[in-house]
Image (cartoon, rainbow over all chains, first blue to last red; front, side, top):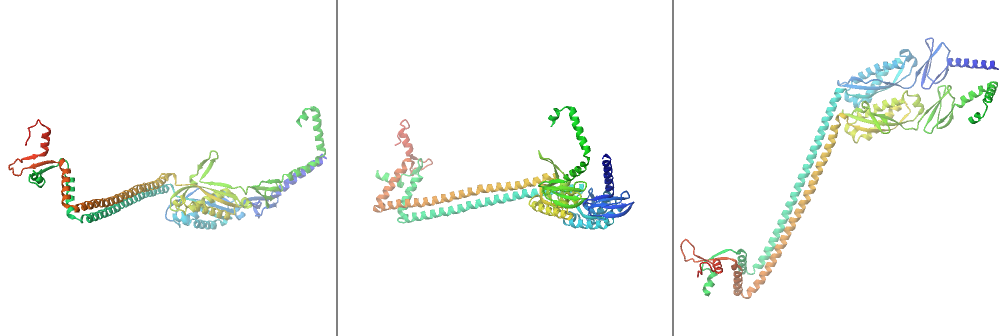
Length: 285
Length: 339
């Protein structure tokens, strides 16, 4: 009974060793090369369970997914001789595992190669375009060009560069300072403009108001003069109508009125004894 | 259970254990059934409501499953990879949330500073909200989905800002920038078949860089100065025009009062004259004399009257002052009666 169990266990473990050394799993995100004593035997790009000859055959697994490429920013020159710091990234994948394995072997050495290739592609493309185009108008086209250039050169490595993009295109430090200085002066100009406009508007409004007020006053003056004139005219007419009934009498009455008004108390009046006023006084005696 | 053991004799316990081991040895073959059974049972998985899962057998995709209770071959044959497909995830660009309570951020300037279309530099922070739209693509197509999304987001935003002016980016262009960037990132992601859906791109802080912030703030205060000056002027306008109108109305009213009073006075005086005239016509000489005398009576008493003798020659004018005479009369101590 015990012996039987022991034998069973040994058989079980041996079979596990045999199975595990003669089979391998390729996951959905992987591809594999089977190498027999240094020579390529098979390329596997479908996921699943595969078998190999133990000991003599070796399995190299490679990633099948899109892979990262992101390096430090580099200083480049644009076509109009402007220095610019370009930070680009790329996504690539291994399309031919054998070529890849033979030429670059590992992902990290592939990235070093890619770096050279993409950098020179960018240098070439950028040299044909101005900074302005790089930053705004033709960014996407530029990336497209760099992608095509890069792909021509990486074919031999079994690599397909899926995308090359400019992540950042910044100005170098000293240019940045210039931009800042320009931005500040631009803002100062704007601020001055706004303040001056405020002054302008305010003056316009004030002077318009003053003008209007002046006109209003003048109109009022005009109107009041007209009204006063009418009053004078009408009253004159009324007076004339009344006084014309006997102008002589009017003059007499009016004169008396004038005396009353002009001879105030204390007024000195000098008379000669034969004046009209004293005549009655003399004659009456 | 433990209470039971405590009440037992230690020897008895030993015996029990031996018995059990013995039975185990006797029926040793059941282990060959139980272990595989446990192994098979370990293949059950629960997929949470916000998750989906991908099932692999020998590394090969079998099926994608919805939330619930599922079974797949356990390791090493099968493999079940879960992903929170309904969860909205957030990517921060230009800043990182350091702590949630209290909320603290760390700025990442080399992500947030970018060139605008009019060659200005702007400091722009944003978030990207996304979710996994296709778990299979998400897991199998892209090596580093989050890193890819980060790179794509930065690149897309800079491309869009590179076509926008700084003024527009800081004011009315924000909505458009968000939409355009979202479309562009989605475009990149679809190109990579990353299985990621971009839900929103939200701009957080859009500011001028620190170096030029003061100048930008001054522009805003200049705008306010402008408004203030205009308002002051309008205040002045509102002050002087009604005042002028009031003054005008006063002037016109005065004039109307003058006109009316002149007319009324004229009418009154005319009426008086006519009444008088009528009486005068009844007896001209008498009335005239009476009016004359009345006037004299009224006027003369207050006057300082001097009567001059025109026959007297010489330099000194001989005169008789009625006023002086009056005074002398009231003061008997003076020189005496001149008459």
